[in-house]
Image (cartoon, rainbow, N blue to C red; front, side):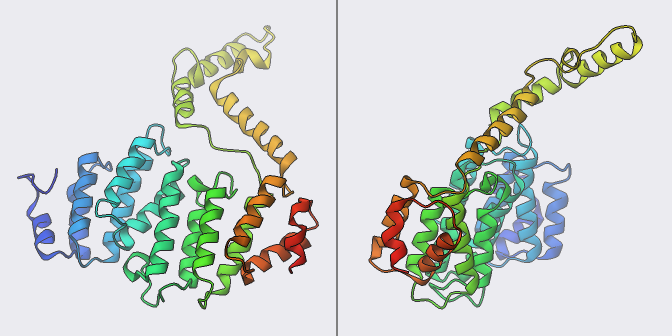
Length: 339
């Protein structure tokens, strides 16, 4: 169903003609587009076309749009919760159809996708962070939904939004900050040096950059393809849960037979390998966490020296690292001497 479809209901035609939507019309849309609890691609396209047309929206529309896209891209994903590259590309192309994210509805939807998904392509997280940064620097009230926004200034609402994106379930990779994220935060810090930023921005900057420098969990969620293998294994009639139940029942019905654990669980099942990989990654990560190595130190020196000055937030970061009593590469000595 698309706008040119002759079967588009009259209620949708009214919304398109007025370029506005009311709570009552949103309820009618839920009944029309979402009667079975599923959102197909054609219906998702229709909702985007409606959103592109709207000049006046209500909170009910924003909630409905975000819920519908989450259902389409997260709940109905195969496997559930994993946003694939193709779906991520479709969503990115759709929100950037006119060159930029349009309004609070699309940005809030993107953030909720990252919060609800088990895993999503990194490009979606960077898209969200860049959208917040660009909206702050432009003073775009519509995208951030903050009427009190001052161009080039980070208030508490903007900092809270950045925090949601950085630590979203699908973006955080066990809450470790990536270098690309750290670069973006440094760029935003450099661009807002003269602004009267909220104190929460300093706290987020120091915490996030030190997180990147000191936390290396090494863990990433199993890939989408790997989880598909797990799903297939779980539903196999001769293996998976069904096979496990039969082997267990066999042991119960034949008490004279000695059953080893491996008789029941098998060896190297897909689910077992997923958890083993996570354990190994976490153990490996703990070995390298809690220190700033030469590569990270070189990056930090380059970032701080980029404009030839030491900002308040950068000085706070160095104070934090110095007070941590953790091993720091000797190349940071000159920076530390400046504080």
